[in-house]
Image 1 (cartoon, rainbow over the protein chains, first blue to last red):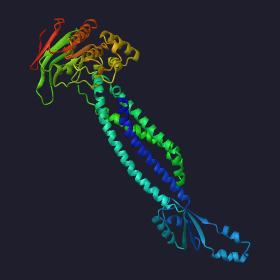
Image 2 (image 1 turned 120 degrees about the horizontal axis):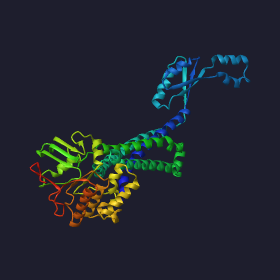
Image 3 (image 1 turned 135 degrees about the vertical axis):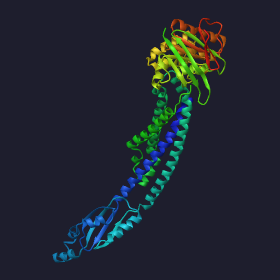
Length: 270
Length: 223
C-alpha cells in the first residue's frame, strides 16, 4: 500500500501535466492539418483587362504565396471550331488576362478583404474572384475548442505542477531520514539519492506509458473515430511518435528535477 | 601506539551560544576503550559528534584517524566515516529496509559485492542472536533488538573506531549486556578503538578502561 501511495504521489500529477501537453499538441496538429486542407481548397482568381506583371501581384499582399497566369489559348481552343479565325483574333485582342493565386495560409475574413482591396489597387485589375468551400463554422469551432483546451490544459498543468511541488516536500521528509543515516556511514551523494532517482525514473516511465496508452485507446475507440470522420479529421493525428519524445522529455525532466531538488536541499542534521 | 583521536585546545560551541567544550586536550590511542561521562547537557554527545564530523569545530584542533577535522572536505569526511562505526541511543536504523539490509549498509557503501555483504550480515546477526529476524523491518523489533542490529551494523565493516552515544540508554538488562559484550569483543579481538558516551559506567565492564569526564565544559582525564 505504501509502495502504491509513494508512486501515485508523482505519477498522478505527472499524468495530468503530460495529458495537458498531449492535448495541446493534438489540437495544434488537428487545426494545422485542417488549415492546410482549407488552404488547398481555396482559389483566388484575378481578372485584369491587360497583362499584369506577376511580381506585382505577388508583392501586393504578404498573404500571396504564388501567382500563375491562366493560359487564354486553352479557353479559345474549345471554341475555335465554331468561330472563324478572324473572329478568334478579335476575341484574343479583347479577352482579359486571368491569374490564379495560392495563399500562404488559410486567411480570416478580414485579411481576405484586405487581399481583395490590395489586388484591386493594381493597375489593370478589374475583378478578384474568390472561390471557397464553406468551412468557416467548423473552423471557428475548432479555433474556439483550441483556445478552450489551452486554458484547460494550462489549468491542468498548474494543478499538476502544484501537486508535484507538494510531492517534492513529501519526498524531502520521507527520504531525509534514510539519507541522513546513509550520510552518517559515508555514503556518497549518488548512492544515498539513488533510491530517489530510481523512483523518479519509474514514475515518469509509468506516467508517459499511461498517457500514450490512453491516447491509443482514444484513437481506437469507434465512437471517437466516427466523430473525427464526420469532422473530416484524420484519426492518426491523435498520437504521433514525436509526441512520445516530447512526453518522455517533459515527464523525465520534471521527475528528475524533483529528485534533484530534494538532493540539493538535503542538509545533514546529525 | 598510534593516536586515533587527538584533541588540542579543542573548543566546541553552537552558534550564538557559550562554548560547550573549552580548551579540551586529550588523546585516544589505538585499541583503547574510552568512556566519556558527564551530567546531562555537559557536552559529551557534542564531543562525540565532532569526532565523526557532525559538528563544526569552533577552535583548537581535532584529528581523527590522522585527519584534521577542521579543514576536512566533505568527500574526505565521507571517506573517513566509511571506516568508523557509529551507534546511537535512538538506533538510527533505516525503517524501510530489512534488518539484514540495515546491517549490510556500511558494506554496500564500501562497494562490496552483494553476496559478501549478505554473508557478513548473516554472520553478525548470528553474533547478536537475531539471525531469525533478518527479514523483519526495524519497527517489528523491540528497542533492545533494534540496538543489537545497530551494533551489528557498526561492526560490519571492521571499523578502526567505534563511536557509541548512550548505546544502552533505552535498553533492558539483557540487551545492554549483549551490547557491552560486543563492544568489548570488538575492542579485544579486532583491536578496534571504542569511545562510548554514557551517564554511568556499568559495573560489569572492565574497570581498567580509560575514563574522561566532562564538567562545566572542561575534560578531566580520570583514568
